[in-house]
Length: 266
Image 1 (tube, rainbow, N blue to C red):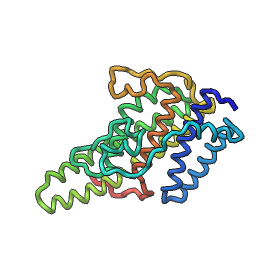
Image 2 (cartoon, rainbow, N blue to C red):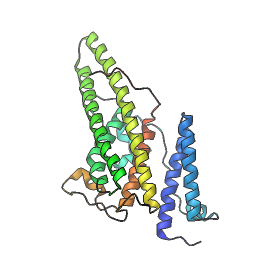
Image 3 (cartoon, one colour):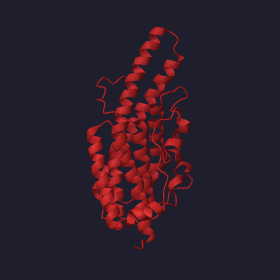
Image 4 (spheres, rainbow, N blue to C red):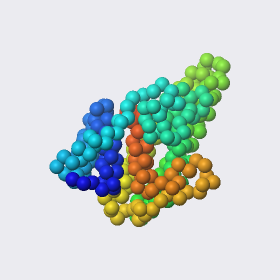
C-alpha cells in the first residue's frame, strides 16, 4: 500500500503517542490511570490500522524506526533533556538557586515555559466557543500556581538564610507543606491541559470542526524572544508538540494521587 506524506507523518506521530501510553502502562502504580492508558492505546492502534490496514502500518514503522525516549528520573534539572527530549527543548532550571527538589524545579520550569512560550502561541489557535472559553480558564489557574511558586521560593530562601534551629524547623515544615500543595495543584493543572490539548490535537488530525485554522501557521510577535519557538510552525505541529510536552512533564513529575493539603500555609 502506498502512503501519502501526510499519512506517514500521522503514523509517526501516533507511534510516539502510543509509546507514551505504553510507558504509562508499564510504570504507573495507579490502576485507573493504567486502564485509561490502555483504552487510549487501543484507539491509537485502531487509528493506525485505519490509515494503513493489513499490517501496512507496522511495515512502514519498522522501515522508519524512531528512537523511543528512555523514561526515568535524573538527578539534575540540567540533565532532564537526556531523559525527556521534548522537555529538553525548553528552558529547564531551578526555581531558585537553593531549590534542590527535582520535581519542584521541573514543575516550576514547565509553568514558566507555559506562560512565556506556549500561552502566546496557543492563543493563536482558533477554537470553537466552548473550547475557547475553557482555554481562557487555564490562564487563571496558571496565575494562581505562579503565586504559589512565588511564596514557595520565598520560603526556600528564608529557610536557607535562617540561623536559629527553631526557625529552621518551622520553615522546613512550611516548605514541605507548600511543596506538597504546589505539586498537587500543579499536577492537577497539567493533567487538565493535557486532556484538553489531546482532544484538540485529535480533532485536528481527524479534520474535525473544533479548530478553525488547523492548516494555518503560528505567527507570534518575534520581538518576544521566549515566544519564538513556535513562530512559523504549523498549528498541527504546535498542537502535537504541546501534547508531547505536557505528557513528558507529567511522566517526569511521577505524581502520586495525593490528597490536597487542607491547611495551606503562607
